[in-house]
View 1 (cartoon, one colour):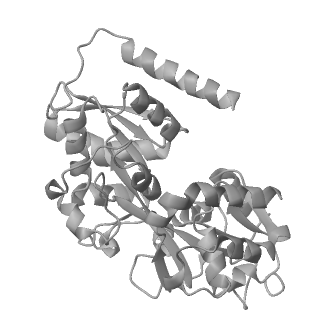
View 2 (cartoon, rainbow, N blue to C red):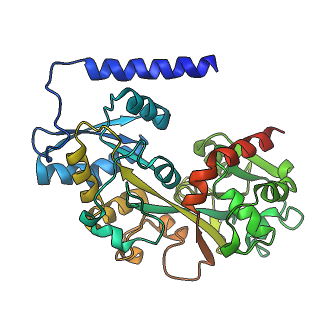
Amino acid sequence: MRSTHLLAAAIAGTVLATAACGSAPAADPAAPAGPDTKITWQTTGGDATEQEKQAFQEPFTARTGANFENVTSLNYISQLITMVEARQTIWDVVHTGSYLVKQYCGTLFEPIDLSRVPAAEQVPEGTTTECSVPATKYAAGFAYDASVYQGDVPTSIGDFFDTARFPGKRVVFAGSPKGIIEAALVADGVAPDQLYPLDVDRALAKLGTIKSDIIFAPSFTALQQNLVNKQATMTVTLSGRLGIIRDSGSDLQPVWDFTSWDFDAFVVPKGSPNAAAAKEAVEFGLEPEQLVRYAELSGLTPVRGDIDPNGVRFSESGKLFNPFLDGDRGDVVLQDPEYWAEHYAEVAEKWTAWQVG
């Protein structure tokens, strides 16, 4: 508990010091985007930052003159909670996941005027909130190493759990239960349209039947290396990662039986110093031209129903593992954002305890 308090204090000190330094006049939260605007944009870092700069920020600068400062924080929700509670928010746009938007809309994130966002009418029911419209979607896909399994190959999610017929290690990301819990339940006989509320104990019991054959990767980089080095020969992981892994040297092939999908969104934090300009930037980013460009750069798929993903210039590996393109892709089911917003913490706690138990 003491270490948690120390972390919070350290974050608070950083936020307050950052807010206090410099002599520039305070930004006007109600001012529209213009040449004097600097929007602070929180991203996941690495290639994602460059992709967001090219697809969203640089075109917005060309249109309005507004500039951007990009920041990356691994513990961004904890940091944002501290900012909002201290009324010292220094970020303007945050890139986050579906269940976090649902969980914190109205407390950490600002409401938006959905009537100003045409994209809101083009996304699946249940994916918008008062604070957000989804931007891109991705999936938890099942894939296997085709250089290992030949002739008799996996064709269903149940084959992930059949180590007698398909021996070898399976690798999953240890850090999140999303996707793997759904896969385990469908493999155990739950109908894809009857998944929620999730029977987590049943899913863990199913996973327990192959626990000795599962590698729990601490990061997506480690998961990738397990497959490239053939320490593992199957995985259920993010569809975008599967393409990267294939391009890195693993002969992965998708199994189109059951796939669950999720989405992300760009939101404006409570107390944003440039709230009006930030909302303009988010609205701009949800326009088709920007979303298509981002999809081409990132491999993610626009959520908007009026954008045909088959017309996006994905890489060949990106196309191979994309469950949203034309063709028989089996059952593709949304990971219920309402369920995960309410239950993520408890499911994650069970998932982690089960791994080490």
